[in-house]
Image 1 (tube, rainbow, N blue to C red):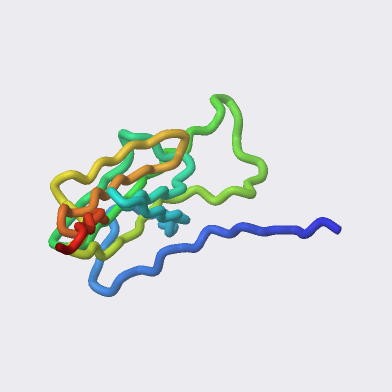
Image 2 (cartoon, rainbow, N blue to C red):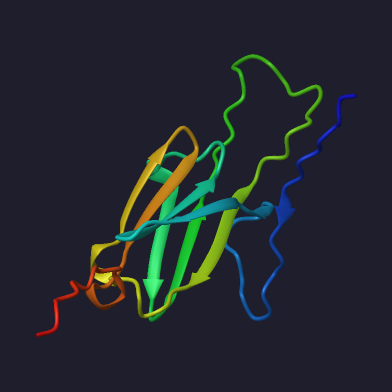
Amino acid sequence: MATEVQVRKEEAQELEGVERTRTRRVFIPKVDIYETGEAVILLADMPGVNEDSVDITLEKNILTIKGFVNREGEEGYGLAYNEYTVGDYERTFALSDEVDRNQIEAAMKDGVLKLTLPKAEMAKTRKIPVKAAS
């Protein structure tokens, strides 16, 4: 028996006192977070966004990612029906002191943003050798 799965985009809430400069919907991108001994890897799904339309900022311990979608229609055609809602993306994360803020890297491929957040030296897993007692 097949199970029907519906995935919905979650719309971001307007923050009080914050004005947006674009009059379009803003969605919260779905994110997968992986951890290795050396880094935390964050994968954010932002379809329609490319490397030129991503803005990543780090202020104090708040990492904010924003992705802007520019919908391009087919020339000579008008949209008759739409099941996919287009909008921008925005999400914020609070970083701990375990992240080396100066070494963060970002890459965008096929609508997926990959952020590599290297662990600070003090937070990295390290092996402690055991010596024989005399």
